[in-house]
Length: 294
Length: 196
Image 1: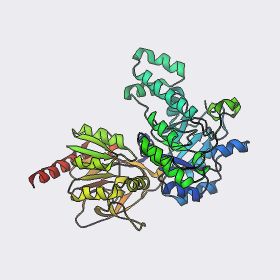
Image 2 (image 1 turned 90 degrees about the vertical axis):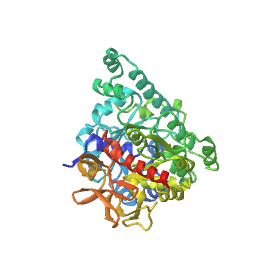
Image 3 (image 1 turned 60 degrees about the vertical axis):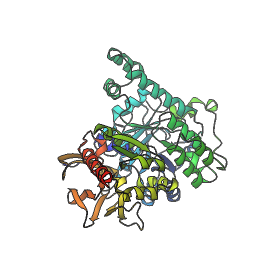
């Protein structure tokens, strides 16, 4: 008989997004621009990360009115963010028919010890990670898709690069490791042993891993693809730029043809000023969203 | 046999793996020029609207139609089925318009309604594991279209001459029987071309 909410169905949904760009939007109009430019999904938010940063205070799940508006505006999948560990926000978004939930460090965590038990849900989840230990813990909890945490709302790619390289190099290390060494490695990085065994066997993560947190230009998107990302989330970059429609299209094309440098040069012309950006060193630890998550 | 997978967006790697598993050569197709060398083509699952934007941007539309018109087989899965259809329910225009059928997008509902089911597929298997993800289905099939499979009364796999389409994703499981079926279509078509 028909089975819903299985690993295959939840992870498979993310497989279909590969090679694509997922864009943050705050209303129906932006969602339509994103769809028109070739986004594979949109993330419905009340504020993009750079505005969340600027506004301060507690950042929560978006107003359901905005989520509903976006759900009705486009035919591509709609994602939305819930606070880390906020079971009810996640259930509310699931009940509204959101296609994917981001249990996100961009919002203020609701639980400082535990993430959601994502296996309990029919809707699939994406979670951020900075290293293989974090990635494996999230997979252990039932995440069906991963993304680098990067440092959201900064327009600075350096943290996303660090996190992607870290996960990749640890996967390489694990796959060439003697089986005798895996348990101690699991202990060192705080990863569930069984998940590491699966990764070692397959030679890769069992879920797709997108880049997120600081993608500001078409070249940034292409860089992350070159480093092995399966696709790209773009948050503040697009709708904070001078010409969002043009910018969105350029990011989509650069992601598809990430090794076609002449093309990337062409599509980077005349895009106007990208978002100003923040040097990570100038952010105090309590202002770094990537430190959230356990 | 050389089978291409249109690699603009979507689950490309999974199809490549399956093509290799049935003993054919797999080619990632990112450029129009690459179509000339192929014996068959797969339009993978992904987001059909995103794929269409990229098809337009790189002038793939007419070359893909010409590829089909030349008699070379095309296999579309999920978004690929939408690209192949002559008509899309509630939309004025279609994409390649090669297969005589009307499809409805996201016809089973949103992601929470996505499901797995075992299907009987004519000429392929009695128990094929099918994964449906925000899947379309075929509302109406033309007279010449052979219906290969239905799920609870809805058409989810069909063949029209040298075109094959499924609403589900055979590439997400290890079952290669459907790809084997497509490979035979490709071999038959290549045989015919060689005879002419």
